[in-house]
Image 1 (cartoon, rainbow, N blue to C red):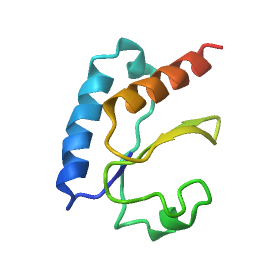
Image 2: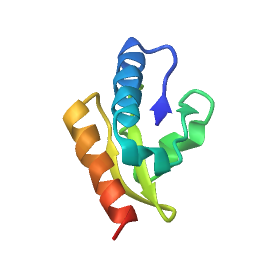
Image 3: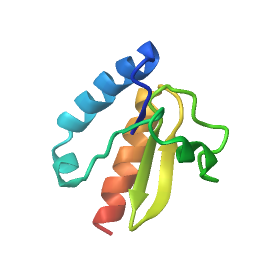
Image 4: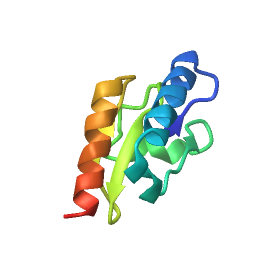
Length: 92
């Protein structure tokens, strides 16, 4: 997750997304990394994220070093769908 600690929207999304993770038993298998958007300016230059980081708790789902999905605005349903895709991919 890419978190802007100064953003109310990001903090709201972070609370909800971590709640979704906590209520999904299979998510315990995942490594979750949270980065401060202000601390890693190179994030803004990644082709997959260029012009998509807005400080609203963007979430990037990575498998074997490759981004397989992302949620770039506060959207609980999109987060759940991306999470389920990642979990399914881990067991495929």
